[in-house]
Image (cartoon, rainbow over all chains, first blue to last red; front, side, top):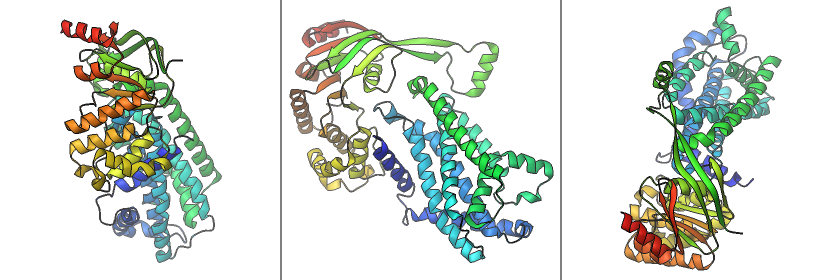
Length: 253
Length: 242
């Protein structure tokens, strides 16, 4: 593909630029999730650790949730913003605009995979064995990348047309985060709430991820199906919406 | 076959009356029936051809449609009606350094900018040093762009854009980059390219540059072609009208 090299450069730029001025540079990609997890672990382990069933350990449970949530949250916000922030390029040089949201999602994917290193360390420390199903995390990552780029493509059009979408999206993402079992076990919720939380596709992604990585949750066939179908639907809607509305939106950049 | 063929080109923007860009206000206006979409005609019935080695100058006041026309030629903005065909690689030199990032080094920026224009990365890597030398910034290529002066940035951008000559150059007021030495250098590079068969579309208020380089000219007013033909005549008529 003609634009593969450009995507590679963009992903690279996305990964290195954020920490360009810092001393340890890309090392922050490793350190960030560990620090966040540690803080939340200190805060929540008293409350939730004892509520996890059987052999599940709280520290890797929590960190897996944080890694996935960071990927989704940053993936959506950054890729939605990527079109508007690269407007000066897009109004002058012809490149397929979709490559900006897609590169951002891919950079998130790389970060997510890098995050497997600290997650393994936390697993080892807390005595949770890493499962032989671990390579399946690859599928979870790809599905998440498709999900985020699909949402990002749709939102990037809205971001240009309506300034206030940003704020609405911020609030929605926060609500979604609390309806995902990131730091609490789903079993502590009332039956009604459990239903709502299971309705959230991210719950299925997270279940599959935790199960595949270290057998730290149960993933049903429904979870797999829900994950695969939502990622496909998202990317299809995203590309369709983008194709349809881009010609009119580019005039507003 | 002409390198650039523009036929009956029309571009219409749809503009929201009282545009606010806020969902709340759009919603309020929609309820009150105040939201109205107005069509704004930016370009109307534009036709022209540019052949190999020709330089087309576009004259016109601010808002006459020059930038819109360049966007259409660059393939960024789709025409509402009519067609615009460019047969060949385009190097858009509209606001130089549009893809530059202040935190990346000069060399990284050259690479990225070239990739944006569709060049092969591997080949560009060999060209980084010569580009830096031509722009007179070779000692700085490994420093972040934010440490460059604005003149250095513009020179580097010009050098990168013209390093591998494309079939079509879209130039918007960038010949006035740098000091007079560099201006001479960049003009002679343009002349070389034109002799080599590059077609140029030039938007400039610099009367001297237009008369020096252009082989034909178009005068745009309110999105229409008011006059076209010999650059000397068009410039004279345009200036008489000011």
